[in-house]
Length: 292
Image (cartoon, rainbow, N blue to C red):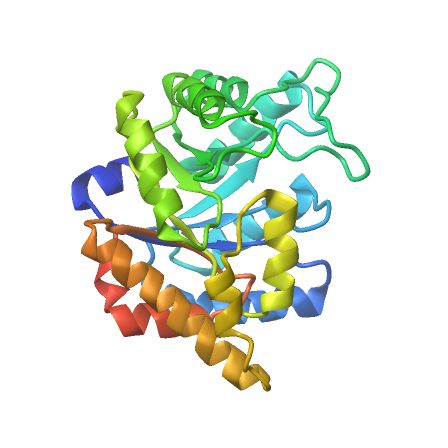
């Protein structure tokens, strides 16, 4: 089931992101949480390359297992890292043979210890090239990443929007934002996108704060600002349970404000957990946003 078509028909979406665990116990725990979230009938679920240098093989294995053991609609992430154009074409054809209808086309981050991405031999250097390849292979609904605060490598918002538009003109039919913690970044991005002639669905990526120290490190690495008022909400937290409560409250407030401003797409970065997301979805009545 193609994500672009589902969103066009329903004008709303509920989705979740997972990453491939590093070991068997982690995978067992992941699928326990996947099955809990499956009850919400999400529009789709995405699977990353994994934190800290995961591999295509791990993503592929998780996608296969989701197809085999659940009713979910999976979308693998696919990056330009360490793969030639020929290899990428083969990977896309393999996903099509499995019945995968969707792919998130990404450039990928520079290798650890470097600050500049270098295209692999006979490979790609930009996400729009990956989008064009997926279009050429055919049969996919194609998503891309967008950056409400601008990509870390873009010198200014105008340059970032230029490259965003290139990805969409190459054939992407929806976008998913990097995490953000102040809705003004999303609203400002959507205003700039409209002025640039971008009208595909842009799904906000929501990261419930499960551990403020961990999220602070994440945000610094990817250029997502963690506002002072968010950090202050955690100053009096003394137990993990109190931290969980504050994190759920903040995510609920963010999503409620998005709903109030006619945003009906929600993509949750789960960190392979389900409790936080289930609570936020329940608080807002987002269960009805799922289904295909």
